Length: 362
Image (cartoon, rainbow, N blue to C red):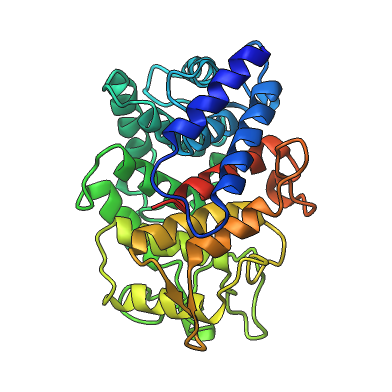
C-alpha cells in the first residue's frame, strides 16, 4: 500500500496541470498529495469513497482527483470509476435505483467520465447520460411551457421543482462533454437561470427582482421562489455568492458575453461582495461548494485578476488557493465546521477543495 501511494504521489507531482499560482507551489502540491492520501485511505473495497451517500460524492472525488493531477489510470481512480459505472441505468442515467436526485448524480457522473475520457473509451456512457439529463429537464415534456418559472431547470425529484444548483451542474456537465452552447437544452436552461437573477427586465418577468434588484442570484424562481439566504423585508429573495457564481458560469457556458446586461449585473454584485473568507450572504454555510463554484466561474470569465467595487485588483487564483490550503486538516482532508449541506463530511468537502484548486490553475 505504501509503495502504491508513493508511486501515485510522484505521478501527481509530475502531471499537475499548468503553472501554480503565486501561492507557494510546494504547499499546493503537498496539499494535493495529502488529499490523495486521505481519499485513498477512505476508499472501500467497492471503490466508493462514501457508499452511504450514493454515487455523486464518489463522482466529485474522481473529478477532483483527476483535474488536480492524478492520472485517470491511477488504481484509486480506476476503482472509483468502476464503482460509479455500476450505477448506470438502462435509460442512460447514472444514479441509484429510485433515486430522488437522479439529475444531480448523473450530471456529477458526466463530469467524472469526461475527466477520465482522454482516449474516448467512455463515449457510450457519456452519450447515454447526456440523453438522460435532457429527458428529465423541466420543459414541455413535464407539462411546463416557457411561461412557467420552472421551465428549463433541473432539480431534485424529491423537491418537485428545479433549482439553480442542479441546473448549473447540468449545464456544466453538458458543456464539459462537448455539447454546444446553442444546444436546445442549454438554451432552455438559460431561461431558467435568467429567472433566478435579481435583475428586472425582459429575461425575468417574475415579481422577485423588483423587490431586490441587486443583480445577484437566488436558489430558484419555481414554486413561489426560494432563496437559501432568506427574504428581504418586502418579500424579495436575497442574493448570495454561491448561487451568483453558479448563475454567472451558467450564463457564460450558455454563450452570453461580458457585455450582456445579465453578466454585467452578476459581475457587479460579485465585485461588491468579493471575499473568500465566507460565502457572502450565507456566512460559513456552503463554503467549499462556494469555493469550487467561484473558481469555475472566475475561470470561465477569462480574467487573471478580479477588480472589486473599491477598485482594488485581486489575483483571485492566488487568494483562493491560499484560503483553501490554509484550511486543510492534518490528515489531508477538508471539512466545514458549519455542517449544512453535508459539508461536515470530509470526503465531500475534500472533493470540492480539489476541484477548486484545479480550477485555480491556469
